[in-house]
Image 1 (tube, one colour):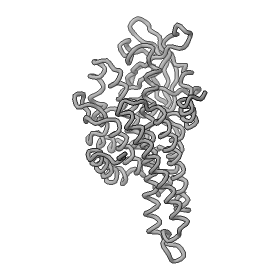
Image 2 (cartoon, rainbow, N blue to C red; image 1 turned 135 degrees about the vertical axis):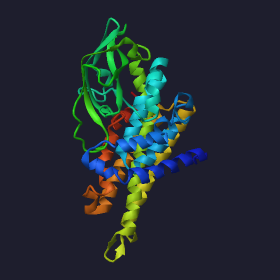
Image 3 (cartoon, one colour; image 1 turned 60 degrees about the vertical axis):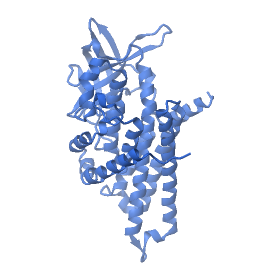
Image 4 (cartoon, helix red, strand yellow; image 1 turned 90 degrees about the vertical axis):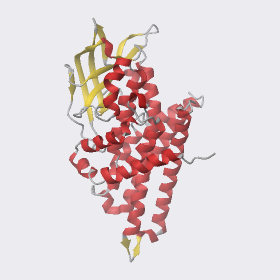
Length: 383
């Protein structure tokens, strides 16, 4: 089996890698320390076509596929994860649900600006009391004439409070099914809708140049036509979105893990101790070798999940494996890189400190790693 990428994917990797080095690397540390959103970087990513990568040309996309997006995420995350998660969430959670489930009118209204990177969409799933248990959602939406009236709270919502955020797609309880379970639907709430409150940005451990807020809905009214897809199918929509998103988060995790290797190799050649470069010390060399093993195997895992997805084959288990293994690799590589850098690894002026702070959330987002183990066990026929 040949795991080497076709030339068009290799060309994309080179283009995005050059962009990350030339555009993101020189300025991202300042954004990170100031907790500011990198609007200029986002604008240039839009001009490069990254927000439209997995969408067909007829709707304004680049005619690529979801795996192409994953490759781009890996290259960006080698430099910075805040920018990578901004792109990942904008595509997977913002534009993709509109493309996949939206009406023709909704696609005409939202997709052109989303795919151009001129607008960001957010997905309102997680709630303060729910976390991993999305089925316990308490946010409600009831029909009042020709309007949905939404009440509730969403937490940890990426891209929800920027100056270019256009809407949040909210998962809400819209009734009760015949079996007594919650009927859950997704409803588009445009930015600026009365009753929608965007709280101040979170004070986060990492991803400090990305945008994350809590959202409140108090008698928030939107047209009935803002229902995304079929009523009662919101939970199923979200499950499919997360399955794909786990491959993307795995790719982002591999990028961070590889970035730790890149920085460590450079540092071992440049830094001297006891009259020799650090690269002369086998103990440190072995640490980097282990880092490379983790990144390499994690990359193969997300390649496998991505290829199954593109082939139309079942990929739920493979996506969970990729996300689990890659996020663990990112955390381990960030810890090792920080150790290799010693005291300098604890200084925010060095990228490895940023990698270390950014890595932990990868074991939490898109389903915690405990959830991934549960999904894998379930696919194996275990309870």
